[in-house]
Length: 171
Image 1 (cartoon, rainbow, N blue to C red):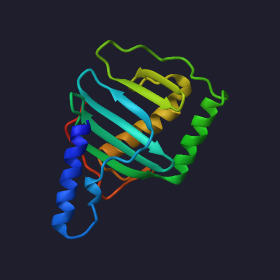
Image 2 (cartoon, helix red, strand yellow):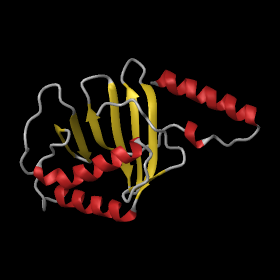
Image 3 (cartoon, helix red, strand yellow):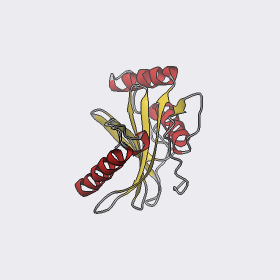
Image 4 (cartoon, rainbow, N blue to C red):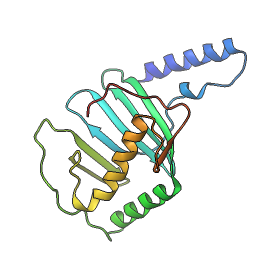
């Protein structure tokens, strides 16, 4: 990954020096440092992850390997009401007011899994089959994930102008 960052830095330096100004196009900026909240775990090397801090949200798609190959990302802003609703749901879970609940079923070994990471709390469950106490959080994050993956404006999220549609993805 360090080699890839060095190549990106060199490319950015060459691009900005040839453009004559110090402005780096937003689409070439490295991913922002946001905490990961939601990851889809596929059987293959392709990885999809959702990162969030406040209303800032970003989906990243890449291939795992010796040097991760970046495939695309969608940046956006959560609607303030959506961000607040998500915070209330997460706070209730982390504060013990909401239990994780029961798992609705177990996937086969080849099924897609979700890893939900909320600070010190993390859980893995089958895609679309969240435990009952996580169902609302899962639906919100899954919907935002699909909206950003397709750069689709919705009541929940507004994609940024540099959103990249990733058309070849599982599911």
